[in-house]
Length: 199
Length: 258
Image (cartoon, rainbow over all chains, first blue to last red; front, side):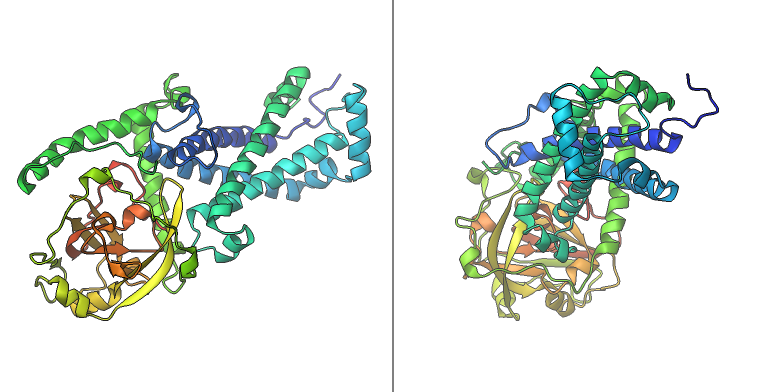
């Protein structure tokens, strides 16, 4: 039984940045789909009912407002992680071997998650990957927004048109993570409680 | 495939009627913006009265004005948009406007006069021949549409900074505004107006600018999105009073830079 003397599983700054990030991602994804529909890159459209903004101009207003929330909140998250040492504690060490071992264990239904303070190697890998993916979304988004002003970034991503694809695929990867993340929360509901109340 | 913008009703009447109609349409456009912002998703928030539509729109427009300032700050007057070999030109280059190709305006070359006004020393009209006698430059650059697609084209014409110098423009003014024969209007910041790649384009791909690309003259701004590249320009004015624009007044970001 934990008492209130033990530190929370998730500190307040982490819970706050988590939920602000969820809000930013929800706005950015749904408004981004509406922008996508203005000139679809691939052979499909996204149903307008699930998009935000009502028309292209409205969607862009939402997208270019929520980008500040995502970026500022993400920066706070990374800085707090670095300053408190949480990043190293929670995500390291991480080896491909450990990821593979935990993947095998998970597929056999034998991956323990008794201690919510300790991430297994699969969780570490997934969270680190999604942080990297969010970073890629921000960088490719910068190229789409200001392709002339960020020439190095533009060329690194293969040019404006390539950046459109990178941005879309990084969005798809992020949403794949979200789907998996929500499924895991449904399987282990006390993780939701911990992310709201801290314990 | 390219244009999906809402259409204005087709008008054949004279300019006075068109102007009057535009004034009538404006309030409905505002309503359109407000309504559309709440559709499909804002209900998440508005549905439980955390925010109402008006304050959401006002807040979003405030962020858009903030984004104007960020872009003005990011804008490097010396940084050039990438240029491409002619082999990379997109053929055919897409047509794009707030109306369909069947409504492309025909401007008569002989009677065409470019009006110049506002904070300029020399407020006289220019003929097409006079414009063609000014120093010319060309560029193969990427046109990026607010919708996301892009296409590479070749434009030639008078560097806008040269033209602004000829008319004795007050380059300390904030804005340059444009009024067009297709009733389009927009405006840009002075720093972009003076950018070396900003052109008063008179030609496309080595030929006089065809009607579909804005005959007799369009503004080519490779550092801005397509809607900041007005076609069929009839009047240019230099001002400190924010002139807005056709799309900008409906909610598109004013700076619209890339």
